Length: 336
Image 1 (cartoon, helix red, strand yellow):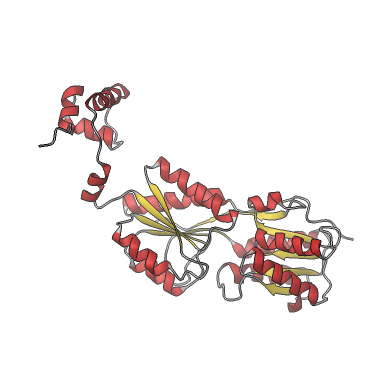
Image 2 (cartoon, helix red, strand yellow):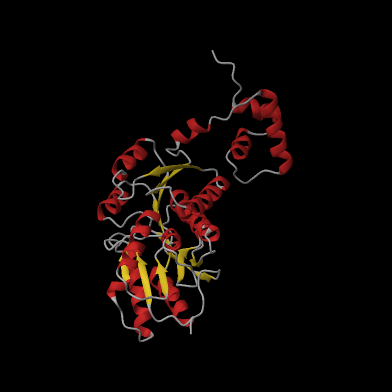
């Protein structure tokens, strides 16, 4: 026979009802600070251990959410994860991070595992645009939210920046600084979301400023430092003249600066570079990188709040498109 104190023992010692003890334990309204203090002291005196796991199993709720991310190599994900974690902790949730691979190839096995563990919700962070992944997220029956991406087929709530407008603004910024021959280190050609929209923003800015589009000034990456290095080398081998580069992300922008340094070129004296994201990488770059700033921490914070709305209220959140801004540092100079 167990001698462990029960909720009734706590109520008796604190001279309150069992319902009041339950409200204190579950952070529900309906009690004064003095009552809460009395209940907490009674719990400590009796050595009462609240079995949140058992309660959540009864409610079919675990207070755990999962974040699916392609990889954790860049500081882009760190800011978003920090926002998710901080907001989740405030609401009494824990976060499980799942690395699904750059192509999302491990998504299916992760979602199967998450179903078995009765995860309360899923946040898909910058996942590759893939109909199979979107279908899995919709069919799993778990509330889902997307960050820095969106589904072209399903109505999964998302929070993001307008990639077309942001890339348009980055290109226009270089044009306003006098640049006319502008290259782009673009995202993946098969990325119908971020990659395609950022390329279209670049092209539209050139067109609106009556600058001919030169496809030889565009090389493609997979949003990583390594592929950025190869794309920059290819651009330099083409011998096409340019004075400015629009990079699809900060990692790629820093790759361009690194390749330039190794080939005896200087940024911004020989050419200017503007990045995208405003990660710590942009701040630590030499020279410090001018870049399009996404509110990454807020995107993480708000994505959890959107998910929480569906978990706790059963209501799908409205999509959010957040503002961006250009942060000026030292990698862009004005040309005549």
